[in-house]
Image (tube, rainbow, N blue to C red; front, side, top):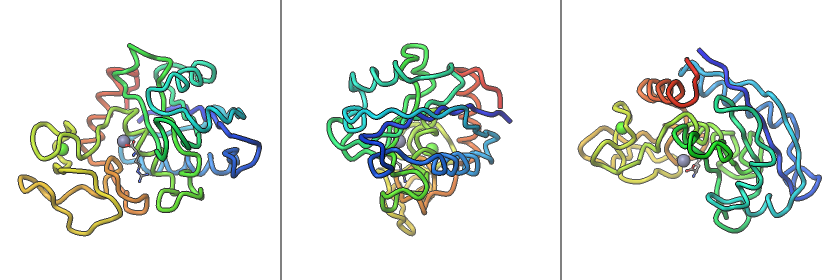
Length: 227
Ligand code: ARG
Ligand code: ZN
Ligand code: CA
């Protein structure tokens, strides 16, 4: 087993909760969700610090690959390669408009340590205002990328897919919580309950043993973490 320190960086457009300045209780509840979801993989999380920044440009526009997200992270990032930095923002415009979140992978770290971490929609935390995506599974999913997992639909029906053998191949992302979805005839029914699919939060319930094995390898190789 291993414990990851988590630094939360709350970005808001003003000082109100509706403006992104979420309360400590939501962050505590989010850490609890992570601990529930990763327990079977032997990973736990502890809150190591929270900082708060009012910056409406960052709140609105820190999309994937934007220079603004690098600027933000350079100012706020804490710890080293074994520590998880989480930024909560609004994604109202630019390359991130409408997103729930995005993340770096462990193998990105050596090339670009500054950008390491997860950026998520503030209202996706437990009890947040985003319908169907407000049970904290967005950070579970983004942290899944941070520990080295790909989407279950990676590569579609052929090839190595997500490089995990016990997640049946899937031709495209699932949405909602479809019963009996089976998009690849070559393998089992779609893993719609997997945290690395795109189903609704209430539909997401598992990582597989194969994913736990992959995360352990990725964390050891790239982040110096031994589970
Ligand atoms: N679309 C995002 C991504 O690919 C996150 C999906 C999160 N899904 C959820 N049910 N919260 O990284
Ligand atoms: Zn994803
Ligand atoms: Ca697979």
